[in-house]
Structure formats: structure tokens, C-alpha cells
Image (cartoon, rainbow, N blue to C red; front, side, top):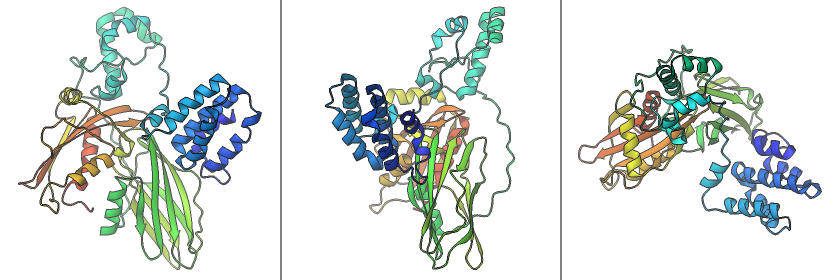
Amino acid sequence: MTGYILGEYGHLVANESGLSPIEQFQALHSKSPFCSAPTRALLLTTYIKWVNVFPEIKVHLVNVLERYRYVLDAELQQRACEYYAIATRDSDDLLQQICEEMPPFPPRVSTLLSRLNKKHGDTEDSRVWVIGGKEANEDRTKNKTRKGTGDASATANENGSSEVQPDLMGLADLNLSGPSTPTVIQAPRPVLNSSPSIDKWYEKLCMSNDGILYEDNAIQMGVKSEYHGHLGRIALYVGNKMTVPLTSFTASVTGHNPDALSITFAKIPSNVIAPRTQAQHVIHVEGKKPFDSSPILMISYLAGSLTTINLQLPLLVTKFFEGVTLSQTDFFERWKLIGGAPREAQVVLPISLDEANGVDLVKNRKVLTGHGFSLLQDVDPNPINLVGAGVLHTSMGGKVGCLLRVEPNKVAKLCRVTVRSTSEEVAAQVLQALQKPLSKNSAL
């Protein structure tokens, strides 16, 4: 039982005293010799999960898997060989896919509805790339049920029916108007601290998972983060550079819609930071639905006088993106199916050329990959144009497909950026996230 729980949820307590990754491993592995073969097999599964979430103890875990490759028990040996092969691959892509959280089991489906909707399929690809996303799919299922079954359909709906997803080509009778989004009234956002350095640090952190967030003569703040699907964890490091303690220290996050983005501190931050020391605060985040702006981190402390610092937390909707690889045919098929407005967002930006007076392809590639997109090769015949694809993970809205094209013009010093998504909301949000770093107004 302990092995299963730590394998699934051990990363949530890894920052607690006495529960670091190596301490969890030592406590669990010390009991392994006294366990039965089925229990040790479960522990091997826990170890491969830890390889994914605790890379700092990967060496110890791989050593255990290596030893188990030569045990006499056939089940343990086979499991250890498979896990060892996965853990020692050059790329972690396969490991992350295997350890990805399983989707919830679908509810039981009416036999009648299954037959009626059989032609529309139920593939993972269709759930990601269907126009309008999950809610539009539910509406479409209800409409088709009413049209095709009459009284029998009404009876089936009373007994409950599950969501039936269309395939990529079953879009003929889909209502492209999309559901209306209720207006959320939020409190005014606090005034932000701003400087060229702060803007540069923020822009860098939007494209990477660790770096400096803020620094002055008194404190330095850094961020280290990780994201898996719709979940993320941000470690905020606050260092006291002074010779006196920081007292009455508080940290909070505001300026976001809690229905779309969940943000919680793992524990209440300590209100005192000793001189020349550093404090760590862990923040758990969950992307429930698409959101359109970065939350605000509010810091205050006493060091002779009250100091308040308000910063944008580098948490954009693209942090929950995962790049996907598509062939030229697959890309253009989805590009055409999504269509233009309102699920297309486009802008023409002024750009700066590189030192060789050419298009800065290195920077453009870095911006797109940093925002979670995979760059697709051999899709656009123009070598300076970039084409990308990604999938947004959300806990309540499911997965949302997103495609983009970046087409710079060296002579005009302009760049056209086009984003298409199965959600018009996501298309606009992604375009907003990419505009500044791709333009000549970038702080980088």
C-alpha cells in the first residue's frame, strides 16, 4: 500500500522535512528484502514512476532495476528488464507517456446510442482536434440523438448517455457558433513592479522552467517549475541578501480566475527569513480551463520599513501545452478543418533582424518550443517559415489542439503569425503569449 501511494503521490510531499525523494526511496527500499514477489514487483513500478518525477535519484533507481534484471523470478526479471530499458533511453518522451495520468473511465454507454454513433468513431485524435471542444461535442451528440431516434432516443437520454466524440471528418452538421462564455468579474489587478530587467526575466521564464524572477539590493527571487499534463509545481526561492532578517514576510497569488486556474501554496510561507539565507515556497497549480492572463505574485516584508513587490508569475496557458508531431498531410488536414475566424487568430508584427541582417530563426525556434509547440519539419517549403503543433491539457475542458504558422518577411521586417485552434479562446490566448517575444519589442 505504501509503495503504491508514494508512487502516485510522493511528489506532492517531496518538499516536506524528512520526505525528500532520497528519503522516500531509502525508507521504501529498506523493506524490499522482506516483501513477497508481487509486492516487490509493485515496488519496481513505483521506482519507474520516481524516475519520471525525481530525476535527482535516477541513478539509485536505475541501479536497483539493473540488479533485478538477474533475479530468478521470471515476473520480476521481465518487469525489471522492461523498466530498465525505458529508464535508460536517451529521450524521456516514452517514460513521460507511460507515466502520464490515466484518463477517467467513461460511463456506461447505451447500446442504442453506440450503434447510432458508431460511424463517428471515438479516437483520441478526434477528442483533441474536434472543433469546439468537449462542450460542442456534447451538444452535437444530443442533437443527433434527437434527430435519429425519436421516442427511443428520449428514453435513452432519461436513462443517461455518455459523451460520443466525432471523428475528424464528421463535422458537416456541427454548430460552429460555439457556446457562449459567461463573463467573470474580477477584482482590479494590483500595480506591478516594472523595469527592463524584470520584463526580461519574466519573458525568459515564460519560455523556460527555471531562472531569476526578481532581484534588488535586499532580496533575490528565483523560480524552478515543472508541468505534467494539466498539473504543475512551482518552487519559489526567496533569498535575503541583507544582514538583518526579513520579518512579517507574506506571499500570495491573485489576479486569476479560480474556475480556470487553481493555485495553492503547499504550506503557509514562513513569516521570517533570516539574514543571508533562502526560503523555498512550493506552489501547486492546475489548469482547469483556458485562461487569458498571468497571475500576480504579491510579496511583502518588513526590513526597517514595509516593502511590497507585485510581479507577474510566469504562468501562461502555454505552460500546459505538449508538443505533438504531425506529417504535412495531417497538419494541413487539421488546418483546413479548423478553418478561419473565429478559431483563427492572426497578427502582423514588426521584427528585428539578426547580426547577419537575416531573419533570427534561432530566436523564433526558441520562442515556439519554449511555449510548448513541436516544430514540424518539411511542412512549409519556405525554410524561414516555421510550423508548429501542440495540445493544451486541462482538467475540466479536456485536450485542445492548436496549430500555428510563423511567416517572416526579411525585406519588410515584418512577420505574420497565425494560430488556429479548436477553441477560439485558446487561439487568441496563444497569439497573445507569442506576440511580444517574436516582435522587435521583445525584452530578450
